Length: 378
Image 1 (cartoon, rainbow, N blue to C red):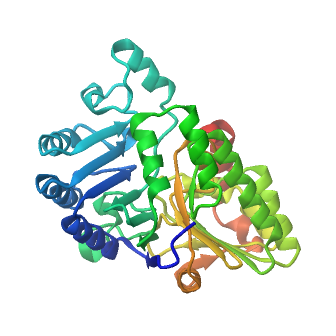
Image 2: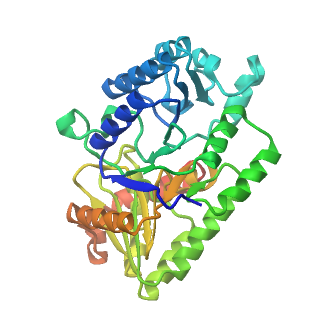
């Protein structure tokens, strides 16, 4: 359980988030443990890399894991510099054909065996965005290390993200999970951590049992919702059980609202999401498309329960990718997240059932075709 004195701070966009983590890295005294899906070697990536390098040179224990989808050959010089300074750098399942990245792979296999291993698990990614500093400060959310997340004023693409900083919280279990991925520990350790996480504020899914647990809890919360279900999500492709649970909640009079991207970093994802509009809108679920920038946040509010993290409403998060979310413990934080949701509605266009036939029906048909053909990977 979280410490009663834990303090939460929510970031509604990346500018403050990056300033916060760079400052924290510069002030770190003992440990820095970081996991990120994408680490671009752009202006923000270079700033964070330099901060990590300085920390390692002053004998802070630095560990960095980047997913293989988010690291390319540009990352190698940075990784080598960090390694020379004493930091530990690993890449979670490099793409099989990126041979130069194999040296930083978490997998212990070699040669042709490693190629087939990486190819076999190419669809299972580490999508977590996690930073732990000095074993008591934690950042979790939807923000990768990339200039794109910045506002236009800061040279970015004005992505709409949400992250949370938790200060003065116990991180023993979270650090064990980080170490589990790092060392690829065995089933006994996974079983122990699965039991510990059943009552923790951190939602993880590194085992089949945890995936089922988190899914069942989500379905239960939706089913028992009394007031409202407010979803903000970048990639919305729910399975039939989640979709039906939302529809049944709306039929009970629960205020179900979903904010989705009008424009996405994955250009066809709004088309795929629009495949569900007919069914959602016909059941009085209110759907909005965010238009102020690229919506990339992943938040969920169900009555007085709320979470922030990396999980999407899609098959990748439900079945394939490693994710991490945090359940807000403070009533003030839940209220703040609800205020952010209301602000997002003001920058969004509400969709109406009567208008669907005239609003680019070809996108919905094409989205449906993409979903039918590639649902396993989406």
